[in-house]
Image 1 (cartoon, rainbow, N blue to C red):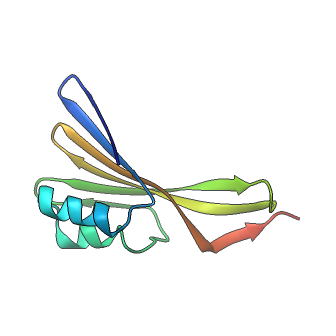
Image 2: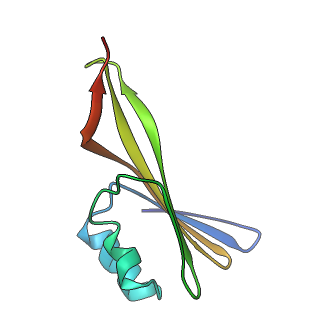
Length: 101
């Protein structure tokens, strides 16, 4: 977990979040339980969910793995709150890969 603060706004970044990071979010923030559940499972489509005090934004990006000549989808989840930005990034989803010809 990495935290960066500037001008009253904090970015907390997780790379491949594990149970420890998920528990941190559960105990320190009032995220909807379904939003927390998104961390544990890959999402196969972009998504925006607005909740009472936070927003979930999930986007997917292609990631080229040069050693295997494959393109895999990587997921970036953004949890937005007032003056706070949580980011979970680069969760490759092996089921959505394609091989370069």
